[in-house]
Image 1: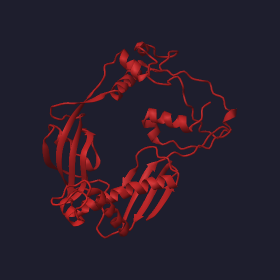
Image 2: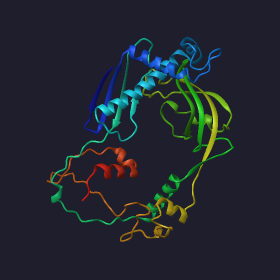
Image 3: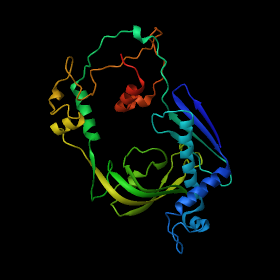
Image 4: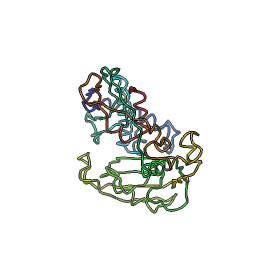
Length: 325
């Protein structure tokens, strides 16, 4: 196995991994030993069926793919540990379809924490600014809080967009199994992209206990050129439909989202200059100032866009790795 790690100026790391066919063989043996304990093969107790019969039941490529998936996960985790990388979010995996008897290459790109090189920050002084928050901003944040506190409730009706469904899903392209998921939950959306684009519209309308087979066409610009533009066949068994129940905008919600700091929604009306808006924006009266000049106190650091997309995630990262005045 050959693993190379490149740290980019954009505060990302790229892992390039070369696997020999012998390593894939060993990974498939490990997958077989794991699968044979779970799969029933007629005439044999669990764990006793020979590999040839398990391959006949599941498919030879399926066992190799299971082994490859485990090997990719293990390699990624070991590389993070060995090179002391701290990921900010899930990685982007470029893993083509493997070919029997051939070595395999895959790459992983992931945003990482990079160290800050502080300047002479002790000589810098800033006036604290009060946050000027509008009523519209407060209402948007309150709606976001309601959504985050929502609870999934199982329902007995046909699935609709924005529901969460739990399914068994098998995806094949030209008789090759690309994905075989069991009891997999996901939310139905009209804006799904990538390999599973076009899938949701076929699941909408299904009820728990129903099964369905259908086909879609993979996007022409799909990253795996060998699969792009080809017909994808689905076999889906729907186990559960859930609806997200959003809590009322009331005093109970105020107490829950503020950890008991606020007992009611009175603070909704205290917005604008001079008013505390920390219920709608936790820590809203604090502002972080980033210096981009060449003064003695300027610090050098690359901030990933992921920090701007998730407020709470950004705050946790800043509090853990950043400095405050």
